[in-house]
Length: 246
Length: 379
Image (tube, rainbow over all chains, first blue to last red; front, side, top):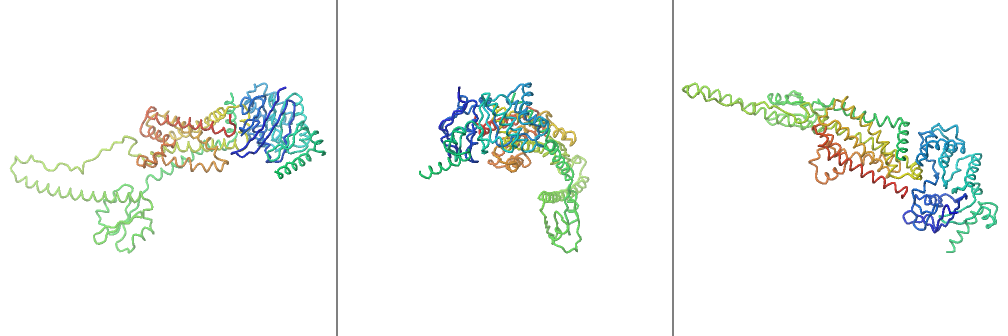
């Protein structure tokens, strides 16, 4: 089967200063890729390049076999940014309707989809409330619901579980796993280790460079540690040692 | 249609935001009403000139000047002109000492100083004319007596037809009437200005908010074209701008009794185009602001200077380089069209070039807007 995302020798930067260096990455349909790294490590920049929001300095980003940036491919991508990005004066339903209409979703499908995604994030009874009255967690859930609208083949989620309580997190993970089982690809950034453990693939980024990649189990065995967090710390030390030996 | 989705959302958001809506619709009316009220009361402002020891006939002649009131001060009062002005807030003091007239002007308001100087020189001319008339009359009388002594044949000789100075001048006004005030001249300009100001600010802040809260990013993460997004914005805010323009112009015509000598539809069209330019420029400028506060700071840079080129200050006498700046100001064209339509009775065709340039500005700003969104998504 065709790769969902294929990145080769990617360098991205602003004003000739590379923020992300030498990234090679393959993500296949059905995979949940966790992009792990501290804030400022270049996760969001990498995501934006995959979305085609930034042009790479060098290297290539291919999504569904086509080079990014490509506006038409966005049809198949669901995106959730770090900020909630909602219209406060509108109700949850109106927010969902607006983003559904940007995807040119037919009316009947929109109605059904709004019910479905609201159920996933447990917002059914709040659909006609204004977003301004929502708590931080509710906004995050609505933001995720917008991303789940429609039949996106690829979901790109930037820190989706921030501010969401544990119970709901389990629920959201169930949904994500179902989507993956149905052949969709999910890419999420996180710095929560519990999320990282659940991903099928991990890419660890530090200072704009990939320091480790593989399944969680694979990585733990390779670095001979018990959890993903220690993998990251160990890989980070190796990166530092390598840098100082130069 | 994605453009309609954006349009619907903009309208819905605006309708929910009652305060912004009220500000956009009634803010301009408040501003215009204030200008109107101030000019109504200020039109009959009188300038006070104090005189001391001045020849009575001169005082009488000066006193006849419109909007000028003369106050006589007793001869024996020993105060300098400076003290008098400080104490009584006179616009000027005229003193006569040893046959010399001295005029001291407060000059805190140059137009009052000008009025006094004009009044004084007119009075002098009046007096001189009166003198001459008196002399002519004396001479006429002398001639008459001489003529009476002459034989009858010479009597047809009539002497001294009416002097030119005494001829009445019938004044005709090409634009406006004798009652025209400065207010009539600036009001059409102020209409365009408030339309521009409010639309610029509201549209600019709207797109700015979309940038700062991340919804612009999210919208551009869908397959929408950049042009569709800008188009939806223009449709949405344009609708409100048109309503606002209709309210302002309607209010000016039916409440302030503004007389439109030219094309009425032209007045509406001009302001709708001014609103469109303000809208597209506001959207564009918001790309250079990082916060609402910064957007506000663009007002004194982008909006206020335009009023200097809108005709409040005579444009024709400006130096060439200043005129070049004026030609870049959309409001210059808007207010020129407004002045021509309202005061000079121009038709729609006669302001065609101004309206065309406004359309040009709007098109230019729309293109720049679409290009500026490249920062968010290169395709």
